[in-house]
Length: 353
Ligand code: NAD
Image (cartoon, rainbow, N blue to C red; front, top):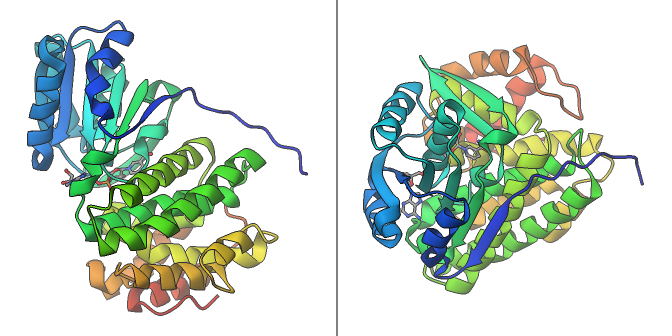
């Protein structure tokens, strides 16, 4: 076994069905009395329901969270937090609501309790990605980590099947990159493989029946583990490509991860000493990239950047940006190789590396 360093993040997790009923006691456990509830406008009704559960502990709601955490939205949310004299934040939703909570924490040091309703995993990471004037930057700081996370499977039952598929693939991407991360370690690899197993079992069942509570529970469990993997290890080529495509071409977050993942995995597989062999085995394929590609197709997820709004004439620029300030990657690459990878991803071809 190679030498490694493992830094675990402290996190309290309450997991199950109906667990949201514990929200008031979790706020009190933090010694807080004045919660500001956060959500996107789409989930404002969930924020109202959560406020009811919190009773006198809820002092306000901010329901305008947006994808990619625009700083202008954060400024308004911080003003609301000040106005209502919030002493903590309760975010319900996916990475957008939880990201807003982290952004407010950055300015006001308010502790956050997250109630995730997608599989994106932000709740388990000390990472905040925010956008200003169309530019997305990332901050990593342990103070941003939510103090408690309530996973309640009931909130995921309403996640539309298409978003369930891509959000699940988004989670898998965290696990795949953790398996070959520069700072990877046996503990995280064990979690990552368990997560990929859980998601590969549950997502097809969810596509058949989105109200299958057992499958939803397994997917949420897998997503939690993927979030730990993302929060604990550094990410590589796959995440760099997705940040480039999302940040500079405004492509949708989970769909982009879904399309890029098979190609990034196929590209890196020859350079990671068999670290992805088990991924292929779990997916019943010879190669991890092929396995992920076929899996995405099987669950009806998009496989081409063309399908999700990427302009063909932007591919050169994307290759340029992705290779300018590259993240560490196990396999060195040239701009031409990335351009060719993006070409396969654009047309939805199986990975060729
Ligand atoms: P999202 O939070 O933007 O949600 C997408 C849409 O689905 C929203 O309208 C939301 O309200 C709705 N939605 C969420 N859960 C639902 C449910 N159960 N039922 C019905 N509708 C539901 O999507 P996301 O993919 O979770 O998050 C994407 C954002 O999170 C991006 O900005 C991304 O950069 C960020 N993110 C950050 C990290 C991190 O560690 N910092 C990790 C993953 C994602």
